[in-house]
Image 1 (cartoon, one colour):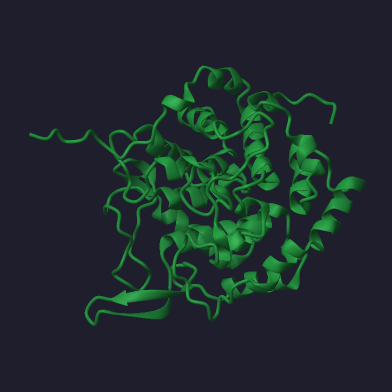
Image 2 (cartoon, rainbow, N blue to C red):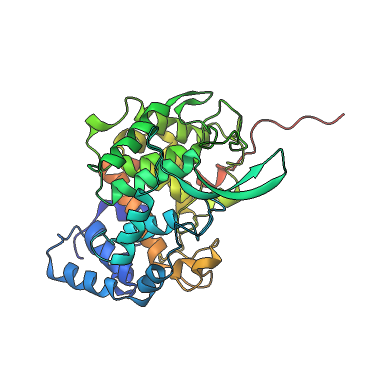
Length: 368
């Protein structure tokens, strides 16, 4: 703990003692590994891991995982979306072999896949325009599929044949959009319905979901334009005054980190891009880091201002006290950023983050 870490210079003070002493099991475990660089076989790490696996908060999430076979998917940004909850468990450090409930959920998702296209399916509510009725069926949007595949990659299933087919599906749909390389919002499988965005526009959250998982693969398995797609994602921020992907704005809601980072949010974009040096070194990434630092108080203990009520029993679901997990989550981004780009500290000091306002896309029309 006495060792000085360059990344802590981005914050008012070193948050690591606060994180270790927080008592939040998953935060302590990840801090030891990701911020203190201790190996998995270190005595303190193994002790922290055992404690995490017995934590009532972890148990509660595992006990209440949605049923992929029966529970209808009503939104990809929902806290009760099984894929989002599995992502959170993986980020805490839960592995597929740690818990039967976790493993069963993964295997259930693997069992539903279009055999021809390789796209994974979700039991979703669809709308029939001809009869004006809603009903559930096994289908999926691309934002389902891409995030599901990323979950499998993070769970270590990249060699599973079903996952390989899923990867091929993602790679073949990478294309040029109005904003650059990325993924468009294509019609749902077996449906004509698609998301509300413009037909040729990039879908930022789909790009982010791919980046969240592909970093674990060797570069020779990346699609050719993966980094270009990442730059397109970051350019959505850079070009916010001129254009806005439909429903993906950059105002107050985007700028307030909201954990867990399921949807389009400053924390989600920074976390998705932090694994790629080419993206970390962009001006857009630096600006987003600078904006995220605004919310840190002088003690570097992050207090959430935007939360999911679903997680009201967790530190990141409360607005009145500091959240160790959110403090850790953002600190990990800063650490990776400095490791990839040592110049980022001085560069961020020169950025007037308060002047980087959100924009709704284009100048307002002058009234007569």
